[in-house]
Image (cartoon, rainbow, N blue to C red):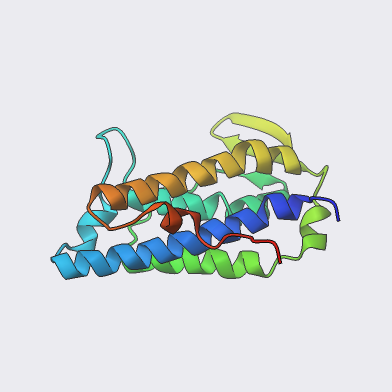
Length: 173
């Protein structure tokens, strides 16, 4: 069997979204145990000019579920605004992204190869093929925002390790 666009994208999204769900849960349990208000975590930044934890989680959902929608409909735009989501709503957003991506079939995703996708931001537009968009833009952004969300939780003291970030491995059967 050949390696496919589905294998390169959706399988990775699902693995890391599963990990994100797990480290969000683990982080929340830690913060509750330590008496840290989850609202404080949602607004945490690693550096003053970085966007907060909330934005990182919104973006990782947008660069997974939203990227696959863009590959289907041909247009990707940055997330609109900065929704005021609390910790529980961020957890739900990750669950929703996982559920939607779980419904995609390899045949449907692989059929997107060669389709046009335009990344629009303001007056600018970047043309891609679906596979170029997913592999060179979406996946790097997805991993960046996932790692940044993880790093913020670690920075705030959550007892997370590398395995928490990696999630369930795709081992040989």
